[in-house]
Each structure stands twice: as C-alpha cells, then as structure tokens.
Image 1 (cartoon, rainbow, N blue to C red):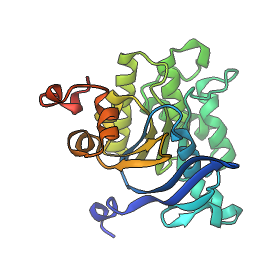
Image 2 (image 1 turned 90 degrees about the vertical axis):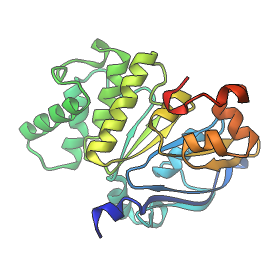
Image 3 (image 1 turned 90 degrees about the horizontal axis):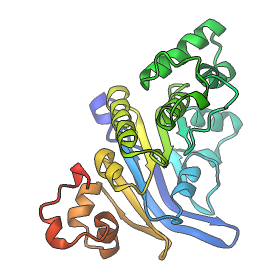
Length: 268
C-alpha cells in the first residue's frame, strides 16, 4: 500500500468500550478511531477516566465491554506471543517519567534494549545515547535523574519510551509539573518526533495550550454522563461543536465575543 494512503488507515480502533472497576462505571459506549501519524488527544476534566482509557488502549486493563484493536488485532484476543508482538509497537511515558533513580540515563534506557533485543553491550550503549540525543539530551548520558531538571527528566522518560522504536507513543499528562517554557519545549519535541519519525502519538491531558498546539484529533470524556461528548480536531470543536459542555471545556469560560478574535492555535 502506498505510504501516503497508509497514514489514513486507522491505527487504533475503540469500539463500544465500557470501562469499570467492579460495579463502578468509569465510561461507557466509547467509539472512535486514531489514524496513523495522528497526534491524538484524550481530554476532559479531572476524574473523567482519561488515564484509565489510556491503560485500556495499551492493554494494562481489560474492557468491561467492547474492544480495542491495534492494526485490526485485539490484545485480549491474542496468546502471549501475540500480545507481546502488539505491545512492542507501543512506548509509554508516564507522568513522572518513571526513571530508576539509582541508574544513569543510559542505564535506564538500556534496560529495555538489553531485555528485548540481541544487541551487544556496546551497541546497547550506543543506541541509548542515540535515543537521548533525539530528545536533546546529548552529553547527559551518565547523569542520574536527580541531577537534571524536571523537564529533562520528562525527555529522558520519552527517550526510554522510544527505546524499542515503537510505532505509537503514549503520554499520560506529559506537561504535569512543568513550567510553561518547559511544557512548550516538550510540545515542540512531540511534534518534531511525530513529523520526523511518523510516530502515532496519543496524549492524555487537560492543558488547553498543549491541546491546541499539538492535537490533530481528539476525544472529550465527560465525568457526568460517563461517555464521550465529542470526537474531532480540537480547533474545529472549539469553533463549531454544538455541545455547550464541549465549548465550555475548550473555552474555559471565555465569552463568545472574545472567541470571535481568539486563535486557538496560539493558546491563551
């Protein structure tokens, strides 16, 4: 299939997904798709189930109903070998970066390379250095997490998520705890990786600046109705969505008269 057509085929499909912990319903009837090379935003207010949805997509939590497929295959319908094959396509960066504090940045990245590849120790170290260079951390290979800033820790976590050359990268609140400048730099890095490497990116966030800066598609979850309220490009939902809850979330109380001149692509 030609490369320019392949990118429009759904990479991930969520069909009739219900998420629950026992009898406690989180979200129901979620149906949407994520195309290859999307920067897809899972958005909504705190407690609506954004991170839980991410856990379902990457296979850390089984659906109460419905299914999630990656390239047409469901993790929960595979044997162990099939599950491992699908999970190798994913890289996940958690809120804190989740780095091992007792290991250098190189050693953190080398963990996955040593476990899941047959690279020699020298090649593992070289590959770890390359991944760190991709996220702007060349020269920090032998630093420990405590010796670098919070923004750099996030980038190191991203380098580790990219260790096995995934087709999809998942971010759980990537700008959490960052100052505005560091958050903007991380947004720029996400876009650069998406454009240069063609990686499909899924981001859990409620930060409007990031949503408008990087999102090419999105879904909005609602904690009251416990289902999705909208699916589409954030800027288009901002301007044209008829649902008042969606407009309220994306405009954050901004008056309609102000919206007439506001450019969501430029943030607030």
